[in-house]
Image: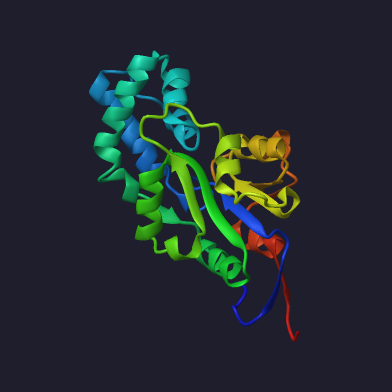
Length: 228
């Protein structure tokens, strides 16, 4: 990983990251809290493979798609989910190896660094503070508690500063929603295949590059030149 003393050339001046599956492995807390909500509501248990599909997309959409819930039932499920997730599940997570060093290197090189996620805003802020990466971020952009769905294109555009050259901006994410939204708004679409994407999902969505580790991602985002 790069040291702050090295001369660093940025591939992008503005770098946005998804959170779940890109900055942090939050899977255990999410899937256990979904399972808790289903048990509380008397729904059949889901297999682990299906529970993992809840990581990333808006919960409201996932409850409807994978459990056949109505809008009202999905709202109730989210309330039951948060009973466990806010105090327990939120912390059943860990940052991916190398992510702190990557964010630090981008920050030290003068990049605009942000989070754009469908996760509720207060949860993102709490996790960023908990993992002590908040000082490395220019912005943290999530959704409100009452918002059922999140348009990732809107989140990306609102997370970027006004007037930014979109050709100098990128979105790093582990699901097709991140890639498709980045392409739609005209910024770089970078796949984090160490997260929760299905095999081939990111390439099919149109990612310009796909990386299987944070170290590979770092080598792409920051070009190191010593002795300058």
